[in-house]
Image (cartoon, rainbow, N blue to C red; front, side, top):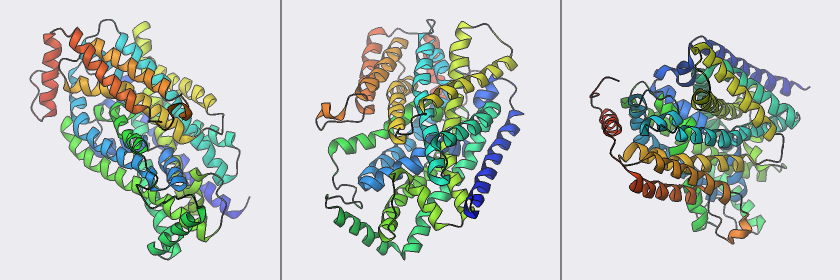
Length: 507
């Protein structure tokens, strides 16, 4: 093993130790399932914002997005634009209302329990179906993080894909298992700051190395001219189609239905703090998205001027960091990739665990002590991690494709339901159930039909899924609506608190 590898291993080892330390410290703060799943609703807006951002921007931000822009140009950056706009809308409208409503509605600590309490659903179908949808799509999502971890170690340390995947999974599961939601959130803050610094450092260092922005542009132009394929890597519109642009922007629709993101809103100390969280979170996201896009552009220029074979475009960030920095610094930059991967996986494991214990077991099982419930939550983390790990055994899986499918599934299944539940008083339990099922089914079917079948109309599955789920939810609710004074009173109270007024009754 050479000296460079030793430096990088030291840096990554220190990162792993820090994450495990935070997880163990947080475990001392967990006394019951409410603490384990939602940190007792004591989260500051800064922690919530960075945690939401880090748990959202998984390995796709440092691997998937730069890889897509590297291969096809800035036309792929429409995804980043759509996501940034979607994040702002989510913090602006959903965060304050969801924070107030989940507390007013029987102190709900998960999305499925909120939906059941919101509609006073005695059939429990909403809770069961939403819990099952979370488990199904999050298993793919967690798997994408493990795939990214395997590719990371294979590219950065020359290890086998399997070893890297298993190591990342083991460390993430360990600190999530004991730290719970608080541990995942605090590690997210550290990981989010690491991602931010790395996504600034790599493009800036490359520009300086290349001799300035003009040199970058010249090199990229040379790549485009040599390709002979009419590609323009520096244009948002070259080779863009209406279908492709709409599909990319539509990623922003997914925010309203991502359980691992909106659960951060529920954990805020108050609805009023959503405004501060929005400023911090969206600023963080805009800088990180710009850094990811710039990494692809400057990487293309660097490898044109310094001929190097890049076997996988999704590793452009990893390779640049290794050739530009001292091995120890490169090790910490590489750890930022692990941060992106692990922060998302940990948050998703917590939501899956809550779906298993809070939303499924407690419906069918017997009542358990708070301590037993917390340990069952930890068992849930382990079960989901094992299943996701089995799915991740295929090293040919695309990080962006796995994330895209899961993102669309949640966005279409839960996005319309959350929006209508928060902002439309006449929304009903049957409307919510129908909307959820339609969104999930449309995404599952649409996303698994080959591009050849669509003949140029390969629209991202979240668009038809979201729109049809929204329409079905409204139509079914209009047919099934009945006045429920208690439900309507809670709706008004939640809206009043979200607007900054004092609660009208004790919660």
